[in-house]
Length: 270
Image (cartoon, rainbow, N blue to C red):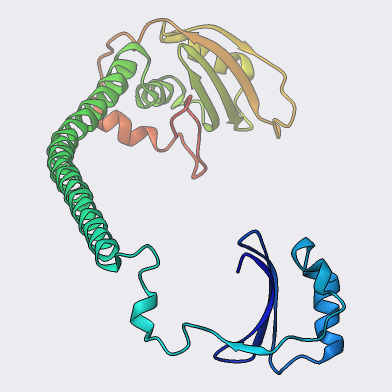
């Protein structure tokens, strides 16, 4: 319509329309035929300038929509060519599918390359681990040998406790004393002796100095000495001067008579 109002019968219900200059100004749908009051409310609220003259007129007669008896297919192509739109959609879908296939192939290729690179790196890591295991084993062996060498070097540069004990047996074996404590640190020696009733302190000091290995022998006062005679001295050299007598093995066995069952300390060695 160019101008005016009309009431159309739809597939379901009724629709009121108001037109102005060939444009639909407003419309309203009712499930049943509107009453006079409902039509006046529609005209007053939304009919617009194109229906101002008909606001007080009664509801018009119902018109049949021209498209009610047409098949649905005739209404699909609102632009006039449904086949062209369908072909365009098909082309767009095909292009989208091709783009998706290309992207998927590129991603799959990248994933394959990454998988191959990871496999190569894992093989290289396994080879490196084997080489590192051999190197670590060699390092551990070298460190153990170095520790043994350091221990041997320490033994060669410091007096041995067993030689000190043997020498103590040689010089104190006839004095009837027992060695209760012994602390050997480098060339410094500290002794804790338990004297027999007939032994004298001066004789003990004299006997220790007689071997020409113990120097600066002096008795010191020590707390918690438990009645022991505590002596400090310095060893002149790594070992005593050779003396004629028993072999070292027999002297070491005899030195056990000088020691009690308790332990003694010799620097960091027990």
